[in-house]
Length: 334
Image (cartoon, rainbow, N blue to C red; front, side, top):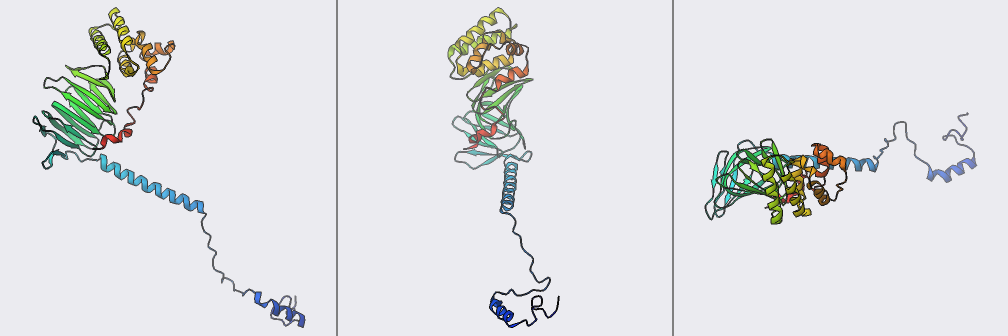
């Protein structure tokens, strides 16, 4: 390569024809830059990556917001008083050990920490036993209360001496006389009635009566008088002794004959508390109420033997299980 060759050296003169072509192409020439003079190329991140980062940031912010809301709603310092509202009067606190009593025409509205409220009816007496995050307990000595709670299972309970009504996220009522007799009715959700080692689950629309250290089988208030009486006599026979006695068999036939499909939970409760009753007419009647077949002899034998898996298989046929407490969010509304 020669330095005077205009083909390789742009500073060389070249011949007349080359100079003419160079003049014609000059407007389209690119200005030369030295090494390192070119600016670095900026590569924009892919749009998909930017979108994912935005979604991730939003999800993180939402999680933090939910956590903060959860901690605020369900957190409560130990012993912190509850607020009590009396119509036409200022608020006043109710501390652990404190007692509320209402007159003949007086009712009170009590804030249960931040998880719900209690409506205390006239002629009632309520005591606050303890309050802290995750555990709030009261005692109804006499009268009537309605508790509307939206919280995880076990956060709220009503102490009844030897027994306890434990909220599983619901709206329920408790009545109690000074002699210890009373009733629990669930308007929405579930409660569990704990009496020693025994636990009785009670769903929406069912009630139990309690007295003298025992509780009845859950019943619908709308159940027929014939069915309610049959269940009552059946329970008396069971309390008296042998579940396999001839009298119990006759009474189970009466319970099955007077039951409606809507009474399935009563039948399920009886069979759960007394698995040997699956030999009786209660088992096929419950199968019909749940839309199941009673011809599965293996399942029936397993139930009689007290097999938890066999019993649980039919419990799962009950709609809205107790663990779904968050579905009952409307219970927290005023």
